[in-house]
Image 1 (cartoon, protein in one colour):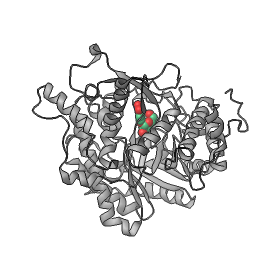
Image 2 (cartoon, rainbow, N blue to C red):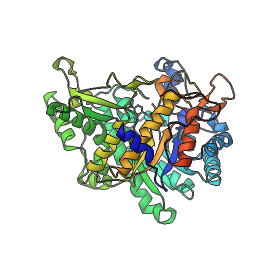
Image 3 (tube, rainbow, N blue to C red):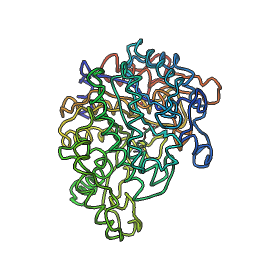
Image 4 (spheres, rainbow, N blue to C red):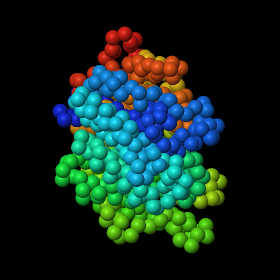
Length: 492
Ligand code: PNW
């Protein structure tokens, strides 16, 4: 409680920046308009709609492709410093390859970028937020190592056409979701189930692709454009179930190293490469299983050096936390998988508030602990929180539970900045508006603006949380007593 009182006295630093995020497939719609090619989410939702909770898709989503002016107005009304959005690869390069550029796609993003800049809102671009061009899936998708160079060709086009005005780039959004869920556990497109293998191959390609895209920027563009390139990696905070137990301590550390360090260690650690514990464990398990070598691919020394340090900031997506302990023997999977390689059991405390998403429970202190963990392990990098947010199912405008989430997580950011001296420079709320929540379709809402998906016009309406964030941006403080006009008071 003392901490909470203190947090309320702290202010966000003068140059601290706030923004909101979205992703192309989740909001744009116009899936086959404007010369756009097909991507893996189009294909999966159309051919296997049973994989989506409500059988829906992003064909129309929030119709943001047609609503640039209106969306920029929402951002202006919020007073955000930046807008994090992603580019649909197949809108720029319909086949995925850089031989044919779709000018209509370029025009769409140029218009968005220009309107943002006119409104003094910094465009913060994610190059890849999951919507891989379908033709690239047909040659294997990310587990095909050759995709790294194809991605770099795409990045080259983006720097060339938008880099005069865009200074903040994120290569990939969440390697773990793309790779483990896309190619191993089937929770994201293309929904493959190559457990213990597909995720590792995919992440290996992604890390090389990221490193090369970063090096390309510094070789050909940085001198003239003066921008920055980073990556966004997601993780929960993993904590020992029993703080006194060394076994639990190890289970938690192993989990974060093999979920988060898997992607962060090669880029942000002093030594580079995958975490030692991950290399050791996957090798041992692989040999036990009869593989001739580790299922985890290895980097050459040149690749380790190329990837190490290839990020100007550490982009962090964080939503939730869990407690970890040793997995009971009878639960250990008897087949290769990342889960079995980690061999820990992590769960949310039953005391934590739940949300509209089964995986998301509210534990604000976890964010502060995670920020400290990152600061200590990776030599105090600049951290940009690129996503943080809360879902519900009812979509209520008087969204007190979302307001509680933002207030309490932002309090922990304040404590991390002022007490722990963590270098956090930006905070991004997910999401500007309700949107297509991947396999959950439209059943879970993360927006600070409500979207009416039954109305062909997809009208947006500000929720209470939008006004509360606006007030935080304006005052640089968290005020639990603030109730915006027209809303009813929350009962804390
Ligand atoms: C993010 N987890 O993904 C994505 O970047 C967004 O596109 C998405 O809409 C948002 O979260 C809400 O789901 C994550 O289980 C999903 O830890 C789940 C987890 C992490 C990130």
